[in-house]
Figure 1 (cartoon, one colour):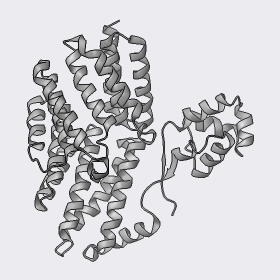
Figure 2 (cartoon, rainbow, N blue to C red):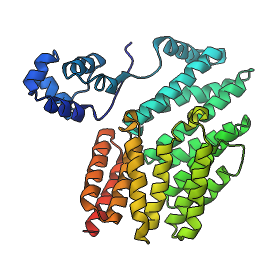
Figure 3 (cartoon, one colour):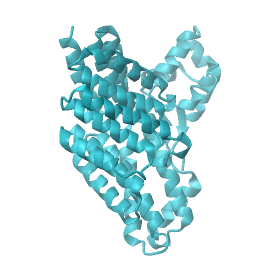
Length: 379
């Protein structure tokens, strides 16, 4: 059985850009790329999904140096892992080390796939895979149980995040609560703190700012938790205070703490559940907080734009099709609005809208609508 494909939602626009940049008509590219005019048109407009082979042909025809080809790749576990997992579904008490390795690899693949195509596209498959993972935990009474429970805490935390991103708050709360239980069982302090930090993020989206701040502070309380996560929690606490209307004197020390902790974090030591805690991510977090401060003090707007623009630009190309990247671009658009650069703000929101359309993210679309309304009010 063929493995599913992960297609970067920017493939179509990028194909068209490269074709026009090379001065080729649709007919000329179709001839060079060993395909038809209709297929080229459908690929550029998003009506057709490219295969790995088609992307490779077009990449060579356009001399794109592997850029287009890299935007289409196989997703999911390799066949041998899929066969092993299928066997364990029928024999849950036969779980072994290689099975847990396969589940670990599958989780990593799903995380990276979500970075490329957004949360909506992976939510269904992850729900199905969670049934296997949680079923194995229920059956596990062997020496492998601690490792299985630890892995299950990571799966359930990821599920919680996906449901937050999809706007399904009740399911998000359930999965994050389960992640907290599982991480507590095996004393995984990093995952306990991670689950708490995502509960804080969920509270933020629900307007429960006090809970957001309290849970963020709780998540960062354990000095044994890795610095990257504590840096994020400091930034999340700062954002909560800024949202609640606190003045800069109360907020800025937490941003200083964010920078200090981020500087302590080696990228090589990040756990799989926190691989995104990079310098560009932290620049974005600081920029978002300053954007909130700029709502009442415009002096923070310029720095907010600088940080958000730098963080968005430094986001890896393979992650720029995700709905979370779209949300960061919305934040940039809002900061540009406050800085008085309405044309650039509109351009940013248009970029975010393209991502919302490609990913089918309703929460992102709602954020864009609110940001556009705010932009219109500043004109």
